[in-house]
Length: 445
Image (cartoon, rainbow, N blue to C red):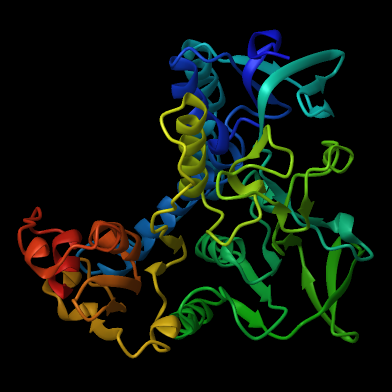
C-alpha cells in the first residue's frame, strides 16, 4: 500500500507532550497528521500533573520565604486551600482547548475516543477505522494502585489535586516525587501528614545526604515518616480509615494517598496481537524510538528507558520523531543532559553524574559548596543550602546537585555548561544578569 492509500502519514495515540510538541511542526511541513485522545487534550502534564502541582506549590514557596523574612514581613502568611485549588483550576482549565487549537490550526485532525490497533497500520476509534503509514504510541502513564483489601479507600494524585476540602489527617504511601511533593504541600496547608516508606530511603535516585536533610526538615515541620513498611490493607470504621502495615501496625487517616508509582498505559491497545514488545516498564524501542513492528513508534513516558520520565524528555522525543518523519534526520536519538528536580521545600535538583557515580572515577573531582556563603542567599534569609559540583580533568562540569529553596534555578543555570562542555575560558566569557541566583551559581565554576 502506498503512502497516499493511507488516511494519514502519521497517527498519534495520545495527545500529551510526547505528541503535540512534534505533531504541530510535523503537520506544518505538509504531512497528514491525526491524533487520537480519549481524555483531555494535552495529557497528564498540563491537566493533572506539572502545571497543577506547581500552582498548588506556589503559595507554599511564598510561605517559606515569608516565614524566613518575619520581622521584615508581617503578619504570618496564612494559606487558603480552597482558594488555591480554585486558582489551580483557573490556571489549567483553558489548556486543553488551547492545545487543541494549536493542533487544529497546524492542520492536525483530532479524534475523540479510545483507540486500539486492528493491524499495524489501522487504529479503531469507536466505529471508525483510521489508517496511517506510521503510528506513534504516546499514551503515557497512569497511577499505580496497591492491589490489597480495601484499595477502594485510597486515592491517587489526580484526586489529591482536586480536593475541595483538605482532610485533617493524610497518610501517603510511597517515597518518590509525588509523595514528597504532596507531603510538603499538605503539611504547609495545615494537614497532619504521615508518609509510609517501603524501605528506609526516599527519592532513591537523588543524593541521599541531601534527601536525609529534606526529610529532617519536613519532620521538624510536623511530617511523620515511618520506614520499612509493608502496607497490607485499608479499612474504615465509623468514618475513620486505617492503614494496616507490617501485619500488626496501623495508622489512622481521614484520607489516603497511594503514591506508589505510575505504570505505562499499554493495556487494551492490542500490542501483544501485533507483536509490539513491551513489559511492565513500558514499550521497548530501538535508538530511533521504533518498536518491534517497524512502522510503529513510541514517545514519552510509555517508553521503557533509562532517561528520566519527565515532560522535557517527552518533548525532546516528540521533536526528534518530527524530524525523523519529516526527513530532516536519519540519525538515532541523541539524548542531551536531562535535569531532575523535586518540588519540595527546599528543592532538590540534579544534573549529569551523581556524587556516587563520580566517586567511582578517580578522574572526577567533587567540589562542595555551602551556598549560604554567597551573600545573595541572605536576601531572603535562606536557612539551608548546599551543592556539589563535579568536574573532569579539563574542568568541564559533568554533574551538579543542590538542595536549597532555589535549587531548580541553579541547575537550570548550570545546564549549558554541562551540555555544551564549556571549558573555563568559555565560562569566563559569560556575563550574567546581576544580582541574581543564576549569577551566583556560576561562581562555583
